[in-house]
Length: 338
Image (cartoon, rainbow, N blue to C red):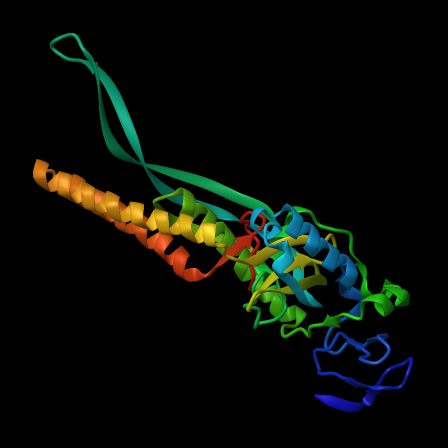
């Protein structure tokens, strides 16, 4: 929504704002006009970013160290470099309570048979455990509801692995904005909504943790306190679009250190042949295993060989048809994206 009442403090140009707008960057001079909207601007923190040229250089460094891309460097054409600031709510939630759960474990006993041989006999038993939970969880979630974008989760994971320094938005130097001129995406979730979702999310994190290490949760009574230290964090995210022959691919970078966190890449002929070979091998394994198992009367072996071969063939067959490779940096963390 455009409102003529909002104009750039520096050049007087009209600004596009909405009730959720935090900062309106002037499209003409790049000046950051602070518009708090429904948020407290003093609680908004921002992570400084590299500029467009630095991200472009990071892309070419990635090309040089990538086994496939380096061999097709002469075919790569840089199409565009786009960046923006995405808002995320972050805060600490204290959770406390009790959990009782059951784990099925294998119990073995040793005995000596009539021939004097030592043997082992095993059976499954249920063991019951009780744990008291008393923890502080640092949670982070998007302040936007529509965030199904390639690389978003990877940027969050990279941030949590090596958190960069941030500063209050109000303290950001005007010169920095003049060099960057990045768009700040509006928030779609206020602080009260974020706190409510943080409390729900904190309990879910504990529940998933116990679900993953137990066979059954018998009793669960864990409550979350009011989140503390809640702030809106603006993270820079850059996307480099490049062209190889007639196809467009892209690489997502974390703006604060130029780390490539996710990418799509063209699939060279030799790698496609590699995947095709894997698909053929899967088919052969399934066929041979089924034939051998049938001839030997081992129906279970035949079934397992068929399933394994079909799975292998299907996996590599999908890779052949995919037409591009997708890479994600970092490893999975507990951080939730709402």
